[in-house]
Image (cartoon, rainbow, N blue to C red; front, side, top):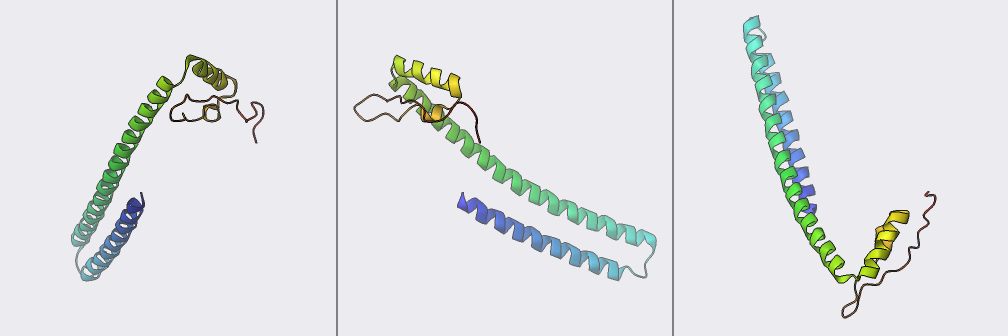
Length: 136
């Protein structure tokens, strides 16, 4: 995750440099076209717009790649959590599952209802310490 932050900072620095270069090129184009007709100015503007478009497309492609990688990692994490959930369901006794379901239905907070299984023993279901009424 930290590497992505560094990559993002590097991408922003690269984009910043590209924009500075773009504005410098635009300024040079405008200076060189001071005595030329309207058509030449239109061509310079079109070139500048093409340059902006290419820089934006590059930045968007980079961001899409980062997001694709994040999606891939989230899918892998989701799969892992689903496997852990299935394992815990298989280790729990029917009484524990019933108590868990009742807990979820009463206050909607399953995280405080089930303790992780102890090696060599069964999972313990403890009453919730949260209030099922108001919340802050």
